[in-house]
Image (cartoon, rainbow, N blue to C red; front, side, top):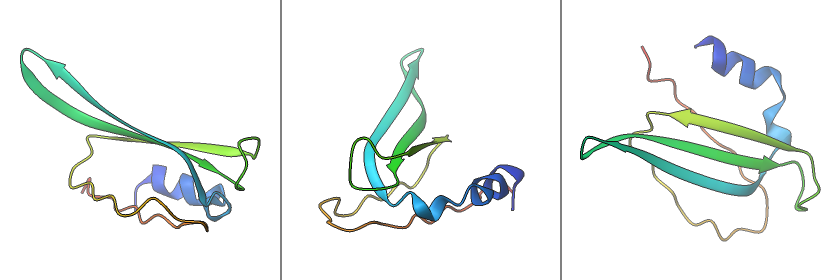
Length: 83
């Protein structure tokens, strides 16, 4: 497991179960599509004033997004594909 993923787990991320926002950015240069960057803003509770955590993923591939119309919190599965 990479150091950044271990650092993520050290921050008790399971308390941030609510999706505040999701941003997907594709860099474009020289008329070619570049890598995707995904930023998730997660909230501790179902309120915009709740404590939040921002997660940024670079060079995203194989992104699958299911139904985002949920009432309760969610859990993310992050796989380190760097090795």
